[in-house]
Amino acid sequence: MKSFIKELFPKIEEEKKYGGVLYKAKSGDTFCGIFSYKNHVSLEFSFGSQLKDTKKLLLGSGKYRRHLKFKCENDISFPILKSYLNEARKQNLV
Image 1 (cartoon, one colour):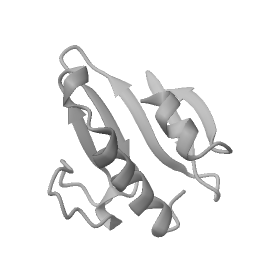
Image 2: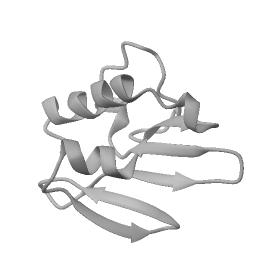
Image 3: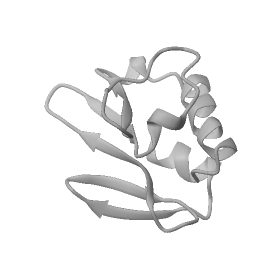
């Protein structure tokens, strides 16, 4: 997943923090992060509440943050992942 994000956004900054990898937007704010847990991996969008979630896959109910949860590698659909990352780009979050 890390290489996929770097491929879509070659100039994006990467920072190891909070036990995961954070990616910084143009503004210097964190755009998203990848975090590994015991039973899943999540891709967390710092401002996920602003994304159009047409596929209704984003989880979370906080004011800003939303995430996609993957329990195994086969759960990752790169076309769907790409659509969420590109939506974030359209919203100028990256």
